[in-house]
Image 1: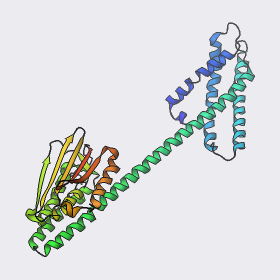
Image 2: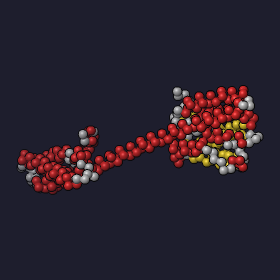
Image 3: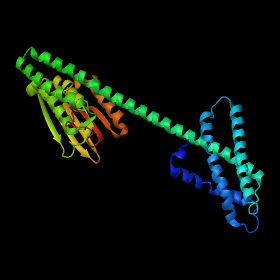
Image 4: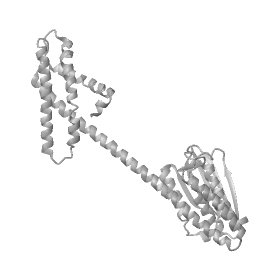
Length: 350
């Protein structure tokens, strides 16, 4: 079915668009004195209304014979034949009207045949343009769907990378602790189980409120505090209005893991891990800072965690998010800025 026939509004608008054609034919047609515009309306309007439906017939032909066909001769012959047939239809309809209303409007049939042929070819061109625009929109829609699927797949893959990486490090810590302090190793196992239970539940969500992401980070740091004892301290400064902002699930955990593994763990006296969150206009900034040994850390990469976070922010937010990381004196700082969105998923969801 032609798209115009699927909507009464489109069809009415299309028929009204033929009014200039009626006016043009009326201007080119000699009229018997005294006939006036009533004669035009009585003859030309019905003829053009009929021909308007004839000019919808190029739709199936355009779909069956695209312009990129190899049989150019056949395409040209098809359109010449179809245009001539359409011109005959317009002339025949006008001839019938002339026969019925001979005293009123004598029509120029050769002129009508030429006009009908040209109008049909013009209609064919417009149909080809409409099909091209339709195919372009479809291609854009398919490309956008492909980009969305690829983006979701990459985000899922990046999230999946986090748990095995973190679990390996935690099990290594427990193994080291078990040989020197069994009770603390058991406590660490319990805290680790709690963390994994929460992280697996929330990790299924694309985004969670920042307060729940901070709770996961605290849970992780509690696990590590069992191992390091007084060597690891945690400081927080969270401004009001930040905690309800949505952030990608498990975004901060790799960063606090790096703060412990590449920072506090390398210091004999230990150090602090500081978490800050502030609202800035329509965004939120997050700072993770830790003490570290600049000499021991020189030339050492922070590994998968930082690259993972950077890539997740780029895939999800594009240029609307930033991540900066680097040493500042005896501290290492990771600074994030991302839009403050309403939570899409929360811990209340099963």
